[in-house]
Length: 169
Image (cartoon, rainbow, N blue to C red; front, side, top):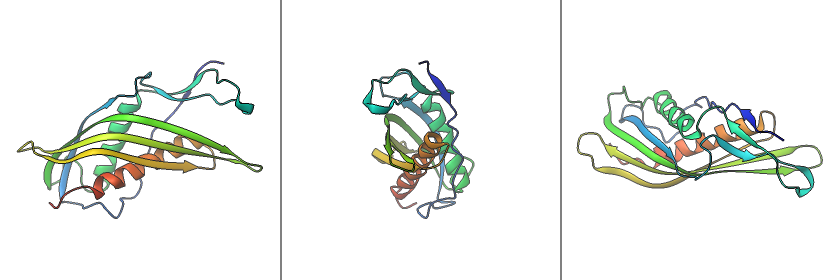
């Protein structure tokens, strides 16, 4: 089996309750991939009966690039983007893990995604770290497109966790 390309272009969800529009102006500067795999790798192709996977599902472009754009779009949608009027900050990070689990039942299946990133938020003026640490986002989907929707849910939860960890402006 050959590899198959999946489009992962998570659109911004409504801003989470943890967002503080106008308090911060966050520029997502750099997201790197520390998984040690092909930068476009999503997950191996699944085979029923526990057989060895052949091939993989790959993103249309590097996952870190998709995450950078997705996080920037979420900050913009929440009124906290780089062009905002709040405290200017820079967010950078590393993709540590992107894991998927598939549960199959009698009438359908569920795909769960877990996205772990090591993130740093710095004040643009002083360079002081406002937040440093690893955060995880989890998503799940039960209807097609399973993998892209589970990925989008994981990005949404990761963004909510980032905004919840922001200090007082």
